Amino acid sequence: MISRGRKPSSELPLPMKALVHIRLKPGVLDPQGAAIGRALTQLGFEGVGEVRQGKLIELELADTDRAAATASVQAMCAQLLANPVIETYAITIEE
Amino acid sequence: MISRGRKPSSELPLPMKALVHIRLKPGVLDPQGAAIGRALTQLGFEGVGEVRQGKLIELELADTDRAAATASVQAMCAQLLANPVIETYAITIEE
Image 1 (cartoon, helix red, strand yellow):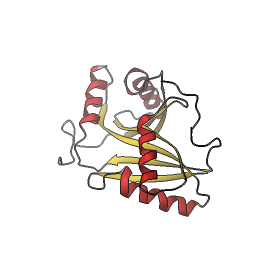
Image 2 (cartoon, rainbow over the protein chains, first blue to last red; image 1 turned 180 degrees about the vertical axis):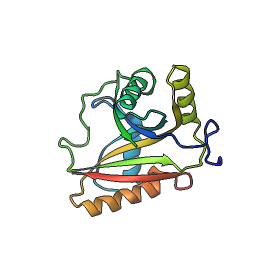
Image 3 (cartoon, rainbow over the protein chains, first blue to last red; image 1 turned 135 degrees about the horizontal axis):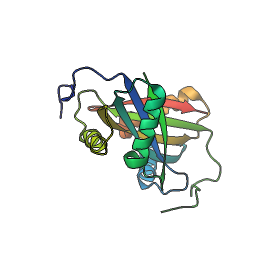
Image 4 (cartoon, rainbow over the protein chains, first blue to last red; image 1 turned 45 degrees about the vertical axis):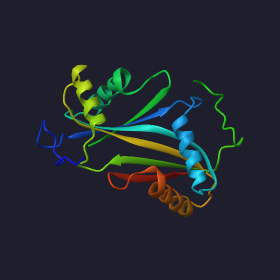
């Protein structure tokens, strides 16, 4: 499915970009990661240890202030993006 | 589901860690990202532009050579981790 690479809502890219890395907390079972590890071994890759799968969410933001953008993305993580019971998140802001 | 934080296969962590960021290519429709964007707007977050969701895969590797580890993870991406038709990947090696 290919779209024309344009957002329907606006024409220009927004000034800030936030990268959110969402990982399962250590000790939380990761069946997807384990399945990837098994598949890699079956494909003949040797020396593969633990494999963990997380999420990467990229957001364009209209904020122009880095601190405000970070606070806003932190609130997004707490309210929607991450599950604080089993996941941790790390936020990187790019301008 | 909480395990004891130990791999069943080995006791010690392996020396190298690879981080693989897998993203949809620009222009490829991302319904999950779009759903996150709509949900954020409904929660009252303003100024959120395009949202894209990707994958983050972390692997422990027994390699001790950085170049060999990168080559190995590149082969894993090409053969299993990423779909080269619609996704791009970036590899980061940590020691």
